[in-house]
Every structure is written in C-alpha cells, then in structure tokens.
Image 1 (cartoon, rainbow, N blue to C red):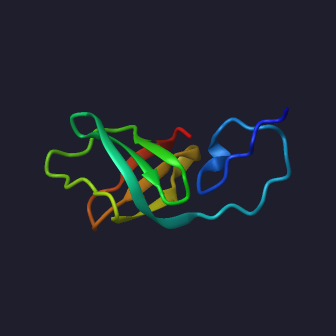
Image 2 (cartoon, rainbow, N blue to C red):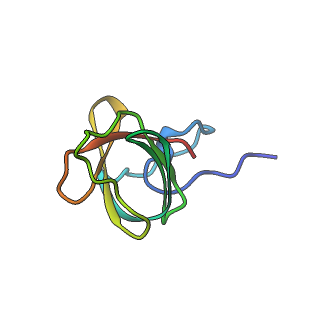
Image 3 (cartoon, rainbow, N blue to C red):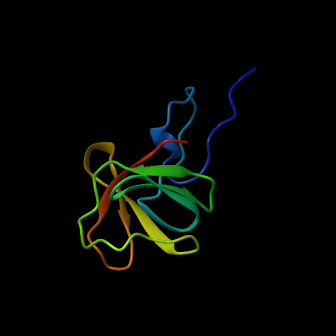
Length: 98
C-alpha cells in the first residue's frame, strides 16, 4: 500500500515518493491549532492545514511566542529552509516534521 501523500505548505520538504510537483507557493498564512514547548524558547506547532512544525533555532529571550488561534506566516528561505513570522517579530527558522 502506497503512503498517503502529505499536503499543505512545506509538504514537499518531507520524504515522499516520486511524483509530479506542482508550482510551490513561496509563503502562506495559517492559524495555529495546537502548540507545545519542546525546550525553553523552542516550540512545536500544528497548523490549520495539518502540518506540524518545530523551531530549529531558539527564539530570542524577548520573543513573544504565538498562541493557539494566532495567525503566522511561513515563507521559504534559502537552501530549502523555512521561516516562521509572527506579530512583526524576528523570523524563526522552522522545519516541517509531519
């Protein structure tokens, strides 16, 4: 049985079987549906499209982390990375884990 294809922004960064790729969006705004702190200043987020993301860098000390229901923007960064933007604060590098 073939694995179910992952959908949503950043799904192309997950391991997947060979298939035709669509034109990939450069940024997308989504709402947070779940959030938890992995370690101090490092968080895991679940977004409205079902994607699960983790901070790969620690947030600055003054960073106000997003909350459930908040809108965040994900954008493609250099060399296949992704950046999360929230409330005009510095961008945080994230990776999609599911």
